Image (cartoon, rainbow, N blue to C red; front, top):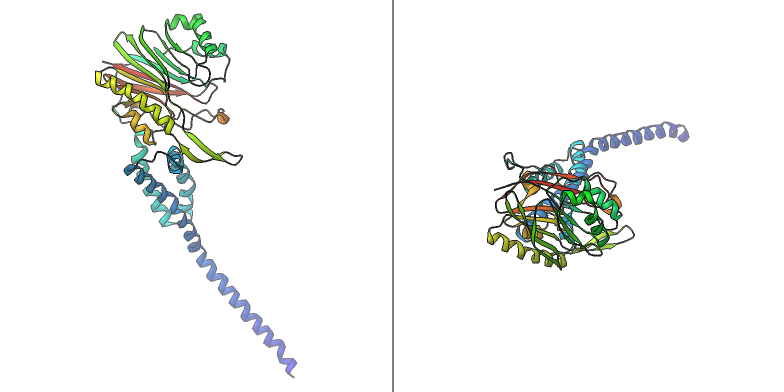
Length: 362
């Protein structure tokens, strides 16, 4: 008789177990969105970390080490964080992550706002002088190609970095360039430290140094004399690991020393009340502390009148990109010379784009 009752009892037990399982599954389903939000909210540490980095650098400039390297890439970190994390915050209704992202974007607006958006009315009204700056990346093109790529340029003043002797010779003997730029200051060198200035107007007082690579001269324009300083400080030393060359360390001490030497010339020109143009590849980004040292008392043409990020450099392995990824090529002014407009051309081979500026000279 006992065996006759075991069948129904087992059925009832199975039903009870199934009901319990269904109940637990239902409870888990109700809790899943909460669990997902919790995991997404944990990612708030990313935007919070970026906000803290901005706060720390506002109080204590970071010049070396991993944190300083993060400053080089700071705009990109903000962009990646916003693009990747904003959809998660919305889809998962992660409030903590959402609030952290909003705080990050507000701080980013203060930090990068002038870099990306220029205020209406900031541009000068006249175009009295046009300038082109270009790091040609030595070894990228033949001397003949280098000269040919300059034949169509119409700027009043052209400053070039990384000009080697064979490229300088091709430029000097090119009849089209000679006709358009009868005045030239050439300081070519083997490797990346050669400099050159081509001008439609007379050049005088040329002073060239190699440590740092700097060309200091005067250009007599129809609007008066312009003091031009072209420089190319050394880049920072970056420590990398693995075959992917992942960066882990950053030492800009050599670059900072060379920028300090250029700054001595800038201070002397400002003290003299010169109309001053400071041009070149300075190997420092606007988010780094050394940029403030370099640009103090000067107008940054891109900040004054440019739109967008103004990036002019891309890695050699990514020269196929039609845009730059860092803004290290600069045109700065002091005295009575004011930015009117600026533009960038990344269409030619090399790791640097061409940077153009137009100026009003009073």
